[in-house]
Length: 193
Image 1 (spheres, one colour):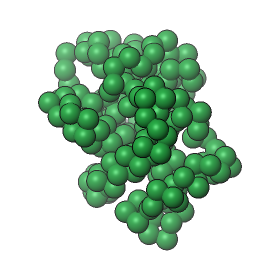
Image 2 (cartoon, rainbow, N blue to C red):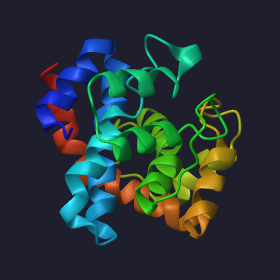
Image 3 (cartoon, helix red, strand yellow):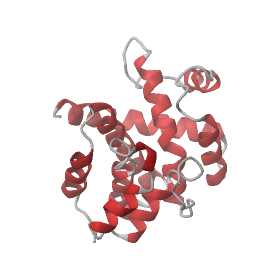
Image 4 (cartoon, rainbow, N blue to C red):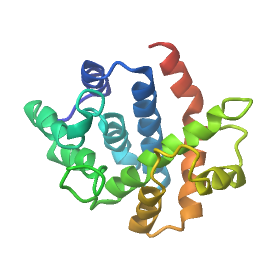
C-alpha cells in the first residue's frame, strides 16, 4: 500500500513527539525530494520524500531496535515493500537492520541521514542559525572536527559517498544545497508543530 503524505505524517506523529526528531524527519524528507529531482527521478520524488520522512519512525520509542521495529510497524500497515527496504537499509552497518542499500534512492538516504544532522548542528552554531549563509568550506571544517557533532558518523557519511560513487565534497555540497532549498518550508512546518 502507498501512503499519502498526510498518512505518512500521521504515522510518524503516532510514534514521534520530540521536536528534534520531527525536524530531522522533515529535513530528510525535503533533502530526499530535492535529490530525486536533481538525479532525474522526479516522477518518484514523493516516494523518495516519504522514505526520508519515515526513515527514523521507530527511533524515538525503540532506539535499541532501530531499523528492526520499523519493519514490523510498516508491515502491519501493509506498506510498499520497497519503502520498507529503503527505510530499513538506511541503518545498514550501524543497526541490527539487515538490509543493504541497493537502489540509488536508498544510497542517497544512507549517505544523507547522518550528514543532515551534521549540517543542522553546524547551522545552529552560526549567528544566523541558518544554512543559507553556510559555505562548503565551513562545512568541511566542521566535518573534519571529530569532536563537533560527534554523534554524526563521519564513517557512514564517507561510506555513503562511496556507495554512490561520488566524491565526498560532492555529497557535502549537494546536501548543503538541498538543505538551503528546503529550509524555509521546514521552518514553516516546524513552527506549526
